[in-house]
Image (cartoon, rainbow over all chains, first blue to last red; front, side):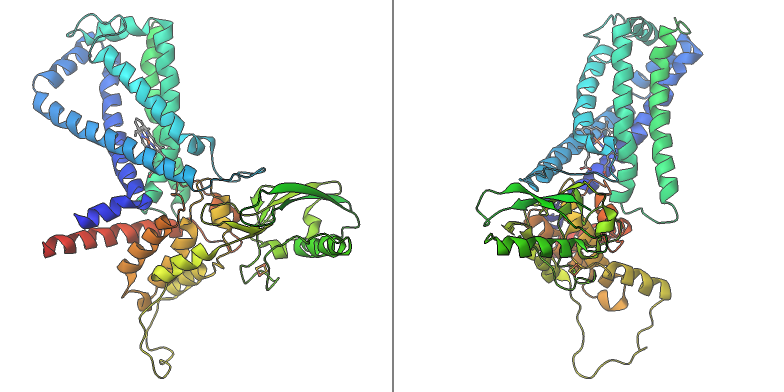
Length: 219
Length: 255
Ligand code: HEM
Ligand code: FES
């Protein structure tokens, strides 16, 4: 236990916690995206999937949700602590500073992160708790989604949120591999390609649903 | 050519500093940046003003004494180059160049462009050593070391401890420096005895001194005059993770 505390006491340890929880959220997002894409197969398919999640897989769902909530909380705690330490490390700034290598995505992690959190709350209120938006039925997921996304403002919020998520994931994927020690000159190009590919796939996968509703492909 | 130097002037650690502009005529392309400062200082002394304080020693890019921010880039615009090896031909007639000290909580300004970098020595003291038997010198090839390992270790050992990585990092992190110091010993057989202890101690010393965390921005690698790469930071992360797991296991065993 003392070893674990000393580990978390350092920012290197906190970053490793962020990277591990990041990997978990990545896998979860991929699963969630594949689940969502079933909406293209028609109302029956996605509604029976939702039914399965709350029926046959209910116990598993409880476990997955609990684990994911813990992961999100740990990720946020470490992110805030690390960022505060970073800000404290340079009390007097430069009058001129040129960035050479870093990206916009990397510099805005602490802003895209909380924005994703706000979006997450909105999203859960809408489709899990059916408290905001035109949500009507807790058995007809298909109708809930379609009617919500037919409102351009709601679709717009989702699309913007997913673009932000893509930014966070783009630097996140590259960064977490480094944090977990995976860096080899031979594979670093591949690592960038994988990070870009993953974040684009996740963003496009999620965005395709509101876009398809707006364009009338799904109604 | 003619240039304007804007230099950070600060009397003492507690004094308030400010940028002061010095127009420079007759700048030659073959002058190094530090030679230009020498010329400026000569004229300041003649006028009875205090010369600009800056750190330097070897002036051939190997000691790590020199270094400040040159128009927002640690050691200036030329890659793989220390400030003393930066020549004025890198600039154009009419340029305005801003010279500021490296800024980090752990690097308090002493005077003008001179900062106190002894924090880096403290990180090395925390674990940058090996156990070796004393007495007569060891046999040259008594310990065999694979060529790739020896080369990689030498790459890490190229770090001259100038502090540019910390100055360039948006988080003021000392990870590149510390990772180079951990790696050049950790890659060799002689460095294995203390390998875990070294990673734990040097990382926690780095924290204690107030350096930031690594967000993998890559700014450090971009300004390092010795070409130390992020690969060593990944290595530090691995060593630290393994050492923490082992330390936890041992702590559990004791209970
Ligand atoms: C919910 C609020 C969130 C906050 C406040 C947040 C904050 C942050 C911050 C500040 C960083 C950069 C840390 C640094 O390098 O200094 C980061 C990294 C990261 N985030 Fe998030 N994030 C959030 C959500 C997410 C989500 C939903 C994912 C989904 C996969 C994610 C995945 C990652 C990954 C993979 C990293 C890289 C970890 C590393 O550098 O090792 N984050 N996060
Ligand atoms: S003075 Fe020695 S490296 Fe520049």
